[in-house]
Length: 286
Image 1: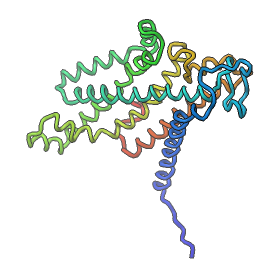
Image 2: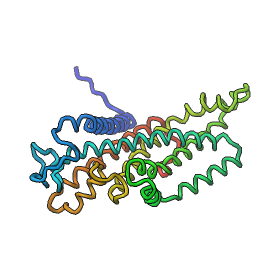
Image 3: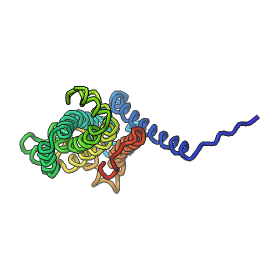
Image 4: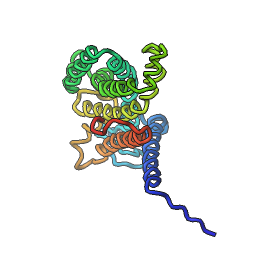
C-alpha cells in the first residue's frame, strides 16, 4: 500500500526556507575549514615567491594558480579568510558590548537622556568610514588594527538602535509592569526579562552586520588603506588581480568568489534567523 504525504503551502515554504538556511551554514563551515586547515595541506607559504611559475594557471601544483610574483593563490586565499574572520569576530564583540550597552541605556533612561544618546549616535553615524580609515592609517599606519577600528567605529550603532527599539517596546508590556510592581529594579528587569527577549533581533542584526564589515575591509584593502603586502587579504588580492583580468582571470576570480560566498552564507543564515525569531523590525532597517 502506498501512502502519499502532501505538504501544505506553509510547510513547503518552511522546508524550503530552512534548506536555504542550512546551505548558508554549510558554506560557512566550508570557509572555516578552509581557513583552518588550508595552509597546512599545502606545501607553500602565503608570501613564498616562485618567479619561474608566476601567473601560472590553476593546476595540481597550484590549485588556484599563482600571481605575478609566483605566490600560491590558494594559500593566500586561506590567509585572506583569516583576516576576514578576524574582522567578523571583532565586529561581533564590539556590537555585543557597545550596541547592547548603549541601546539598553537609551531604552531604559528618561526621555531627555534617550534623546541625547540618539542624537550622539546620529552624529557618529554621519562619519564616513573611508575618511576614518584614512585618518587612522596616517596616525597608526595601514594594518589590521586600523581596519578593525575604521570598520567598527559606526557598525555598532545599528545594534544600539535595534536594542533600544526592542526595549522601548517590551518595557511597556504587562509582564514587565507586573515585575516592576513587585519591586524589581531596572538592572534585574533588564538582565532577566528585557535582554533575553531581544536575542532574536540581536542575532539577526549580527548576521547582517558581519558581511557588511567583511566587505568594508575588502573594499578598504582594495583601495590600499587596509592590509598591506606581503600579508594576504581578499581585497588586496582583488586589487592586484584586476589589471590582469583579461589574461589571468583566476587572480581576480578566487578572492572575489570567496568574498561573495562569505556574504551569501551570512545572508542565508540571517534570513533563516529572521523567520525563526519572527523579528518585528522591517527589512529596510537592516
